[in-house]
Image (cartoon, rainbow, N blue to C red; front, side, top):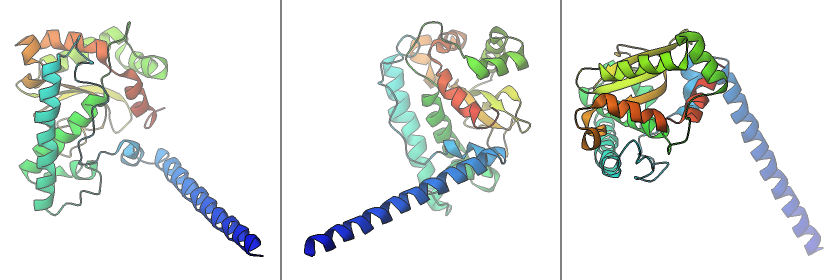
Length: 253
């Protein structure tokens, strides 16, 4: 009788757990599908960014052909780490809930301090930048629908590269080059100063970021000195087009 009771209790407990798991799964799927059918901001939620600095998806030396080991280590462990820490500090001072994604602050950044703008932007930009790169592969270029969209808008992949490279090379001082989708879900290329990005309500360009390139001097100076164009030319070999495709798929395809 005891064995039968124990078995029954186990069965009930297991059934309850499975029902809960199924319920959670259905809820998550439903939320995701709902987001995919709604606005740009909701759809982009699949790529929400926390205030914490995530580990690099590769070692410091993995991008050596384009970015040297020393630059990667200093860039990640010093510059980017400081943006994360300072963004948290600013959030605490300004009463911002850091359990919410940092995108929630970026889209209304005009309401917050310059410290929040610079550091929340810096943290977001770098977290995306690391994912936009991977170890060098041969003939590295986009494929499938991503390539089709690039060719449809810019004429060719070569023309796209020239325009994107120019956005980075001609950004005066420090800043970023971007491939982004505007509010009409059309691909655009542009640049932003300092640590601004297209998500910000104060940005010169507005939309959902798909690909970013850091053109601050600390991102390339040890290897390239003042030759920013050479840095950009080498960078094409380490772009993670699979990641760009994933971001694009959530808002356009």
